[in-house]
Image (cartoon, rainbow, N blue to C red; front, side, top):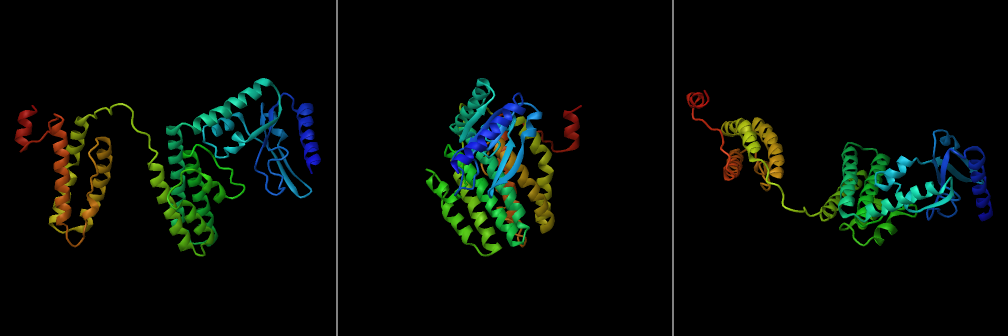
Length: 345
């Protein structure tokens, strides 16, 4: 078998030299991914084309039951792999160069490999990439909630765990190989979300779509809390935001407060809820931008008694106006149209 692999590698290299000498920069194997002689990653895995014509080397074939895929990975894709944008990270991290067109091509490849490991060691960088993978997992979860077919839900759960595992591995300064199962890799990581491996083992044993959906939710929730711990500390003093903008925002949104007060007074739960939802969204934005703390408006909503909602809205309005005035910004209030016209000729 070893001799056969060696001959096949020799065949590819000779083909490159004889037919694509100027068109293929590298032939690469990926170590550590072959499972029980499946042949993957051996004797080669991919090549890096140097020209458009080099892509013509690509082909698939089966020898003695073993599938082979001689496929191209461009320099641009290799760069994206180094920047953790292409998730087949092992194709760069575990790469072994079998053939190179030139020393310069080898050096270019090795610099990209160095860039990969530098990025994995950069806490701020991997935190950002972990969030991106978490977002993908959460989007898959949204799709899952509207799916009832067992095989679809099961596959979505698997993909959710995969993206979460990628995020967790990045925060551990490494990447997944996953051809030998995820449990051994995950359990070998130094830091894990709470119950992460246990939830995944439960996924493997789950027998219903309801179980799978519940477990996917637990996995995402656990991963979110874990990732949040890695948020980089802000360096230096945070610039003071322009509270003139907040005053303009409040002057515009004052009508929404008025509507909420009116709908609460008239016990119109439908209209009060609609306006409160819009205001809650706006409050979430400005509370973050102006460091106002959590602004919970809808937490007290009760369709049978809207008085607490009106009280909460008033409390938050007072907090907003106090913050504006504390920073020396005057809210443009007028008691009447005549007063406004007199002061704004």
